[in-house]
Each structure stands twice: as C-alpha cells, then as structure tokens.
Image (cartoon, rainbow, N blue to C red):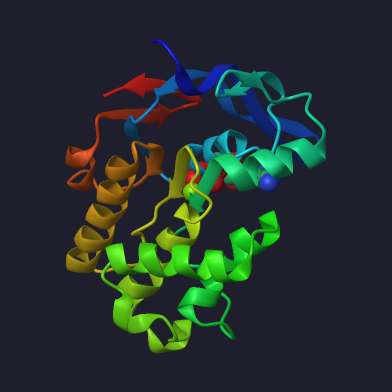
Length: 226
Ligand code: ADP
Ligand code: MG
C-alpha cells in the first residue's frame, strides 16, 4: 500500500499479572491507508482497546514498531509523542468524556487551546463542525443538558477540531440505543469521509461494520481480515 497513515509492524503487548506475563497482542501487523475506514472487532478482552492505545501513542509496544505517516514512533520523546497525538490523532471513546462545567463549544475548542491557537478562530472552527453535526442549536449547552447521542456528537467534533489525519474510536456507540448508535455512527463516518480521514473503529456492532471499507478481527492475540 502506498502511503499508509498508520502501520503496526509485528507488534506485541502483554501485561504482568502477578509474576506471569499475559500476552494480549501476540503479533499484530496492519496498515491503514489514507482515507481508509477500518472496523476492529473481537470479543471483550481480545485486546481492541490495547491496540487502540498503542496506535494512539498512549502506550508503547513490548516489541515491534508503530509508524504514523511513515514516522517510527517508539523512540520519540514523550513531548513529541504528545504533540503528534494532539496534531494527528482524534480520539472518540465509549463515554463522551466531556467536561461537565463547560458548554459544547468550550469542550470542542479545548484541543485547539492546548495547541495554542487563537480562541476566536477556534470558536469559529468548533461552531462550523458542530453545524455540520446538526448541533447549531446546542453551542452553549452543557453536557448534562444534551442527549446521549448529542454528547457523543460533541465528542466527535472535539476529535476533529485539530484536523487530525486519523480517528481512533473505541466502541463509540457502546452506550447508545440502536437508533442513536446508527445516527452517531453515520455522523462519524460521514465526517471522516468528507475530510478524507483514516479511521480505526472498535465496535461490537456488525451491522455498523457494513459502512466500513474493511473489517479486521482480533482473536487470541492475532489479527484476521474478515
Ligand atoms: P478489549 O478492548 O478487546 O475488551 P482490552 O484491550 O481492554 O480488550 O484488554 C485485553 C486484555 O488485556 C484483558 O485481559 C485485560 O484484562 C488486559 N489488560 C488491558 N489493559 C491492562 C492493564 N493496563 N494492565 C493489566 N492488564 C490489562
Ligand atoms: Mg475495550
């Protein structure tokens, strides 16, 4: 594949339990092309979140290499990894993780503020993304005043505000009812497609996987193409 956005090369990761090392990812290799949207499935405990944490540069593999836009990331400084995370990656989790005391717009501009961008510009950008997500009437609402689906769409806006190249989503509709799941999921896919983003989305919902370019499955520490 020319020009992969993300590449995992023979990645392994295990966790110490007592004095035993439990392997979670035994050997995982994969690439995500630019603009490619991939579903990640596998039973609970199969290592989906672990894989996403590694891809998101939140953790390091025990062995193997992780490359983001061709750059090997294992040996980068923490500062550089943090910067890449902020610039290149957008995260969406099962829980929205919005700050309760802040409005929708204020939540969405946080990553822009951390980058040091001007507030007025950040607010315009945030409002534009919220408009795209049909949340124009919700700018000043706090998370507690939003429905579950709206909260998750605000979280999607926050993931997009720094114009990342890759979205990493960990069961982003896991807390939502089927109808709301469909709406939120379609929003995430459409927003990603419109921007030509790559995405890796862990889900248990095989129906939603139909909207993806490709589905991969984790099983017993190995990755399989569906
Ligand atoms: P999934 O997201 O597919 O449900 P996880 O990646 O969360 O799976 O977990 C895979 C396995 O790794 C589980 O057995 C889990 O208990 C273990 N695990 C994950 N993170 C840690 C950690 N920080 N310390 C110890 N064990 C962990
Ligand atoms: Mg998980």
